[in-house]
Image 1 (cartoon, rainbow, N blue to C red):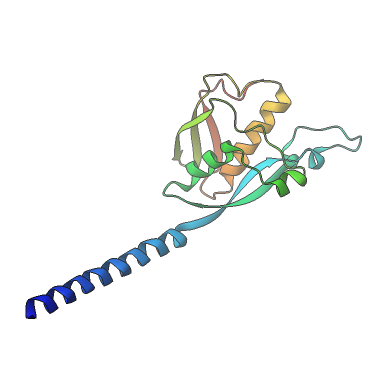
Image 2: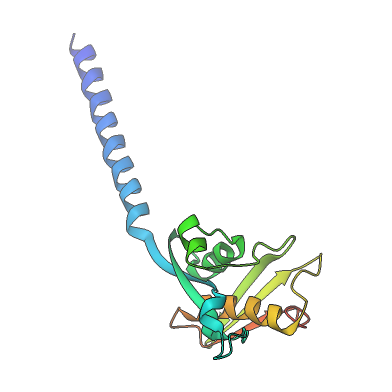
Amino acid sequence: MKYIISTIISIALLAGVYYVWNLQNNSNDTINEQAVLLYYFNQEKDKDTSGNIQCSRQGLEPVSRKISSDNIIEDTIKLLLRGELSAEERARGVTTEYPLSGVELIKSELNNGTLTLTFSDPNNKTGGGSCRVGILWFQIEATAKQFPEVKQVKFLPEELFQP
């Protein structure tokens, strides 16, 4: 009988330890969640007095997301590249050409304030007219520069985002 009671108590203790451990791990996920901004484009904010689109940073519009990550800068850029806008954001005039077929962030390196982003673009989707590529570039740059440690953004290979 002592053996049975001892076994039951041991199982109950193990279950309790597992329960507490599981609660702590789940609460850590919530604690690590951080609000970030993804910068997309709203042409209504980018018009001159004659109503012409200027293709400038003035048209950037932030949308807020929550993300949990060990590499917050890289994962925020990857989230931007997915181009997921809500119906409400689209109704406000927020647009994006992302995702671009085949465009993928391969790696990011931050050295002395310069963030170097290395992309793969096997389908040459980052090229085009100067207005288009400027806006694509500005979206990534503004999204990266929300982080105080990022002062400058460079893209590799350098042929990307060129008119």
